[in-house]
Length: 413
Ligand SMILES: Cc1cc2nc3c(=O)[nH]c(=O)nc-3n(C[C@H](O)[C@H](O)[C@H](O)COP(=O)(O)OP(=O)(O)OC[C@H]3O[C@@H](n4cnc5c(N)ncnc54)[C@H](O)[C@@H]3O)c2cc1C
Image 1: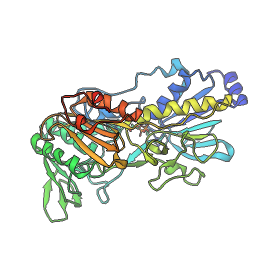
Image 2: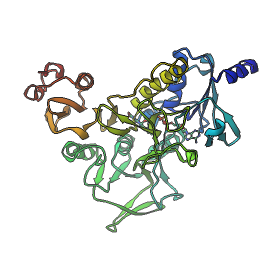
Image 3: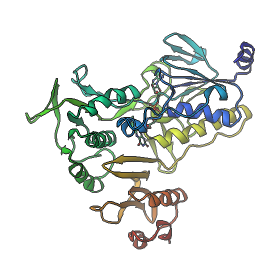
Image 4: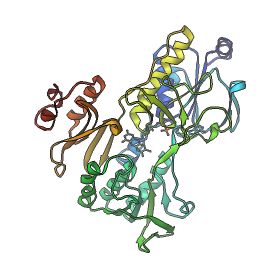
């Protein structure tokens, strides 16, 4: 980009800086260009790698079936200035400047897209053989661990824990998953829905130990609070992630109880000219009547479209677009394709389609006669149709809905 163009953009107030070069940051930059934004777009990421997609890290990349998962985006061709290996360390809204490790960066509009970072297991930091799984570097460190077919202990039976356990079993490791709650996915799904998933661990040959807390991690073993000692050539900690927003401390950007940026319905933050999107930000869901903090890929795809529309709209006086998605995610675990759409907290009824002991079934959550959420195991058609039915708030017939042979879209009133 020429100096002259930079100067013109600065004069016209058209410099967008995106902090964080993950899915949400990349999609924001791309969406701006797709919508015809012709000012300066600068994407700053802390990691040294070409921006990449995270879901394959716990699947194909981990197993060595894919070398990497770099986004297929022609940054240069799109005129997106990519600044990699540079951490953003602060924000000074009064000066319209970001601080980075190597000096300040001015912006006219800032998009915060710094995602989330994994929660560490207290006391396990620095112990040899303890791993997290969030970055490409993490996945690359774990690949040889799987190849050595060690005893592996996974701490946490959430989405990442289940996917890692799946890959480790596939690689021939002996796997024990330690979970403090009474079931897998305790933070995400109600007990009756998660119950059938317990058997998936045993079917795959992994040992799932629930009600089990880690007392300490030593080189080569994990000691539980009941005194039992598990051999561990490697330990993988998957106990959740929290928004990576420490750098916003003192900036005036409002943060919520989980450290997330509190965005409004148009994904604007409490500070003018600063937006936030992806894993780092919560937003008020008009659809579900509560604030949502979503740590899934589809949110990092859809949210940026709203942000880009609003950045452009602000220059033309267009009323801001509202972000009110039906959240969606998928997981691949123990040979099953698990998909979820919606938000079940508001539901008053749970109905099943199919036998939860079998390979394919769906759970439907309703509020009154409207579908508000759905979990589909091996039934992608249910998911696709259900997602549309949730979006359109179509009235459902509960009797028809429980017949797994009938398409969901034919179970309406
Ligand atoms: C192993 C794994 C598997 C997953 N699998 C699935 C799946 O199957 N399905 C699904 O729906 N979701 C999945 N997810 C979740 C999904 O990948 C995330 O929701 C998505 O990556 C969020 O994108 P993001 O851009 O908001 O955040 P991130 O992907 O976290 O990207 C944020 C980027 O900002 C950078 N950054 C952070 N702080 C700074 C700073 N101060 N300065 C500069 N840069 C900074 C980070 O280095 C990072 O590259 C998975 C996540 C992981 C980790």
